[in-house]
Length: 478
Ligand SMILES: NC(=O)c1ccc[n+]([C@@H]2O[C@H](COP(=O)([O-])OP(=O)(O)OC[C@H]3O[C@@H](n4cnc5c(N)ncnc54)[C@H](OP(=O)(O)O)[C@@H]3O)[C@@H](O)[C@H]2O)c1
Image 1 (cartoon, rainbow, N blue to C red):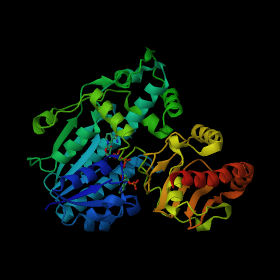
Image 2 (image 1 turned 90 degrees about the horizontal axis):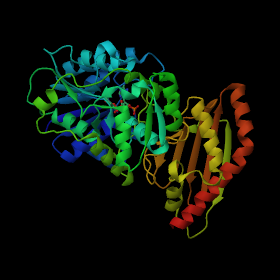
Image 3 (image 1 turned 90 degrees about the vertical axis):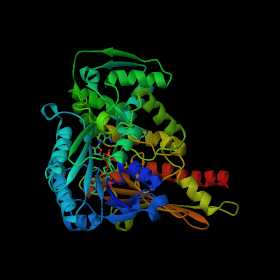
């Protein structure tokens, strides 16, 4: 059986591709991940996990030995450092390690568009493709290029869905009328999977997409699929900055992603070759409306496998080393006894249902206010919500928290990704007869301490109510 290595396996595309290849059953699947705890428990024993990143060449070489095909599904866009440099280095390391390890083929998914008009992010994606394809005599690269990807949990879909659902009337700037060619996530996965056995010996660049549409047309068509009537009034201005603020206010995505999207849509991103139709005859991409209907269905059926906010995007994994708040010097501890008749597992289940559309109980409005201030100061706010209402896994975003540890029936640990002068955690330790709920805080300097003591009176309401309500909810579940 051939071995296939997937990088970016904890990201939006990589998670779905991993599941698809495992279901397919034709390949040994090896994952290169930065934090093995992020791999979903249900597949742990079906994959060979190698922990590390593309900046470690030795590890890359070892991970790639015996691999036939290697997927490159990585980017560094969320990094605080210059992400173009990181992307270049990562791609070079990967190509060289693949050559050294004797890998037959690299499959890379990049962005659609041409270099001349490319945004900074797209340029970095193009450079990555060029680097990976740079030594065709030594290794073959299939370079797929996609524009807007529509699927449950994808950033573009979340923007379109939120704007269409929340705003009956919109004034739309010029970039909203730029043409692009979206594609549904199922088709993206089919092209990626089909690339493993593609009968072609040279490098190949394959542009993938469905019918050309502007963002405005996508919003109109999405509204139709959702049974909504929306009025879009075009204005001849570009206003990328204003648009980005608009997007962060009404959609879950942060400023960095909103501005990259708006920047990317300043110029057309349409297919530059017909290699998809020529080489992948068996795939006929779904229409945009079909992809929206499918994404909505996955959401309604609680089948969202991955989201845009699963990954860290930066030069390091965002949750590694945050699963132990032992260094915290300020704590708010609430102990809630639960008597006979309530199972420990139900207390744990109730704790795991906090946040998102399930809300934060009686003082939800205080969380909403906190979320609003977080959002306007550049954080995630509350509207990332959660992937599924009844299930959590390590790495899941939960409003402005991230799940950093999950011990079934025992412990849920959340790390704060909100803007806060220090580091904060929220821990639920479910013991046989009591729930111990602790907010841990490591303040940054004087400001951190001032912050903690200024919100302390609110903690008295919010945290006491939270522990009590979780136990009450557990009683309903028992
Ligand atoms: N999603 C889209 O809408 C879209 C559209 C067009 C093209 N694409 C392309 O598809 C590819 C995958 O995108 P995506 O949306 O799936 O990205 P994503 O959700 O942001 O995931 C990125 C993945 O890369 C991992 N990673 C980042 N830097 C790494 C490094 N140096 N070493 C090892 N792993 C690293 C992350 O790990 P952690 O979990 O540890 O952070 C995560 O698993 C990218 O090339 C992107 O340009 C995506």
